[in-house]
Image 1 (cartoon, rainbow, N blue to C red):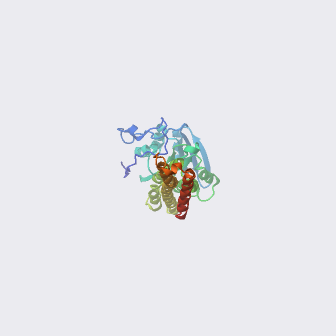
Image 2 (cartoon, rainbow, N blue to C red; image 1 turned 60 degrees about the vertical axis):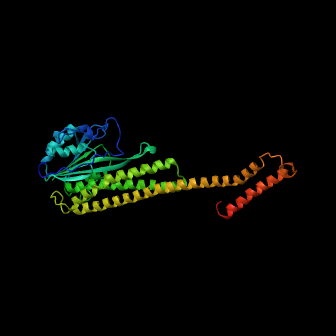
Image 3 (cartoon, rainbow, N blue to C red; image 1 turned 180 degrees about the vertical axis):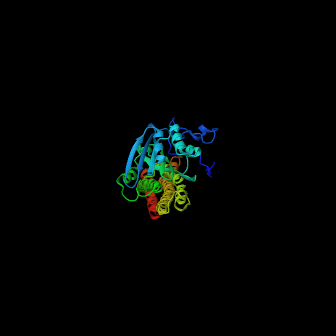
Length: 376
């Protein structure tokens, strides 16, 4: 790759939370194609690709939708800051046209449409290319609620920010409202601060997801001791899988934010670096919380197995006590069931009542013995 750019090795693992829709394409579908071939890897959204433009200065704010990529050309030469939001990745010709207009390398555009990328950052000199994951819960089916990870790609230039989202969402609405209202320093600062605001919104949304997971784990901790059922085991296993998926989505982000906070790129002003360091602290907090949750879920699995084992032991103890009480009774029945002619007790008038008394006394004696040993 030219301009001193290096292409990092990407993981080929598919997310456990990704859809298995027939319209979904996988990395193997583009095997053998030359580097830089734009093939959308992921689930195709039902909506069309949309492009919106937010152009602002300290005194002005304009937001509009763009139907043709060529309508973005005037923003290249404007003296304002521009945020171009591309929502939808399945129409690769639009992604290619936007990239060509802003001179984004084809290998980076290839990473934009490949939604299985891990979080990373690349310094191309004239711009920074950043990939991260937006996480949220898919709650359409409460019984099969899963975690969805959408890819967000950012291209940060001197006076522009390109954002490529898999689908339209409301995650960045607060950032847009801050731009519209002109509160704080977001309109006074450059696009590096805008990139911080977008990344900060993504990381803050992680905490929303963690709070929901914390509530779910709290309820499971109560049930795992008192109600260890096979359904509960499936929930714990699903939760453990989610923890692994979340860790894989968040862990690489630590390096990305760290490079933005302490890197040497002139695109990040010194005044903005403290804000990225704050996001870095939040990212570490998220990772530590995920590690804690993962340990708790692993402990819940051990508690579940112990609870099932204890329940089985209780059942076996009851069955053993019942069998122990019937051993002497079986001996008496077998003894007097031999039908020998010379058994005086068979002709005795009180023989049958005496056998009943002996049987009852034997059972009562065994029960008292078990109670004394604290086995009951």
